[in-house]
Image 1 (cartoon, rainbow, N blue to C red):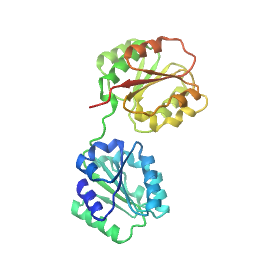
Image 2 (image 1 turned 90 degrees about the vertical axis):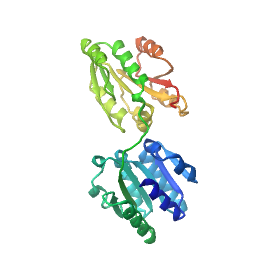
Image 3 (image 1 turned 30 degrees about the horizontal axis):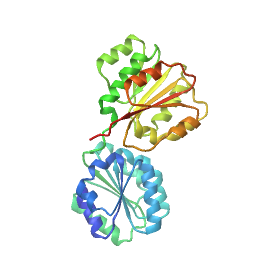
Image 4 (image 1 turned 30 degrees about the vertical axis):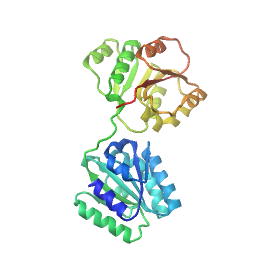
Length: 301
C-alpha cells in the first residue's frame, strides 16, 4: 500500500519525501532510487519541522513517513503546519494498537485516514486532497508491520556491557537497561544487591534517568544507544547533575557526529572506547565527575 501511495504522490509531480531513521528499512531500494528529493532525518520532531521549512520555500506538499510510535513526538510540528495552512502529508506506519486516537489530531489536520479503508480509497482521498489545494496537514495511518532499524541493544555488545557493569558495580547500585538480559546476569545482580531496571522508550531516556539519579545517592548506570542520546542530548545541559551517574552508549563507527565538546563543557568525564576491557578499566578508576562512555562498534552489515 505504501508504495502505491508514493507512486500516486509522484504521479502528481511531487517529489519531496522525508523519512525518519526509525522507519528507514521500510522504504525499499526501488523507492529510494526513484526519489529525487529523499531526506532521512534522525528524529520525528526534527523531521516534521524540516518538512515545514521545505514547504515554506517550495509551496508544494511534502510527504513525511514515520513509525506510529513516533507520531506523538511530531504533534507540535503538525500543529504548526495547521496554523500556517501548509500541505504536509504524514504517513504513520505501525501495528493497530500503536495508533493514536484520531481525536488527538482532529483539530490540527484536514483529515485522518486510517487503513480500515482499502488502498484505492486512500489514494482517492489523497487525490481529493490535491484537488482541493490542500491548505491543512493530512494524516494517513497504515496498519503494517514495521521494519525499523533494530536497536543496537539487540547486539552482543549490549549484553557484554551489561555483564561488565553488573560485575563492576558495588552493592545497591541501580542499572537502567533497555532489553531483558540472561538469567545468569540477573542472578549475579541479585547476589550483589544490584537493581536492574528495564526501561523502554524512544524519547526522554536521558532526562528520565537523570531525574531518577537526582533523588538517589547510590551509583546509577544507564546503558543505551547513540540514537537515544542524540534525541535527548540537551538533557546533559541541566544544572546540578550529580557525580553518581555513569552513562554508557553504543555507537556505530560509521556515524560521524561527535559530542565530545558538548559533554566536556558541561562537566562530564567523557571517554571513547573500543573494547569491554577499556570499559572495565574506566569503571574501576577513581573519578569525581559524572561519567559518559561512548562504545564504538563496527558498522552493521
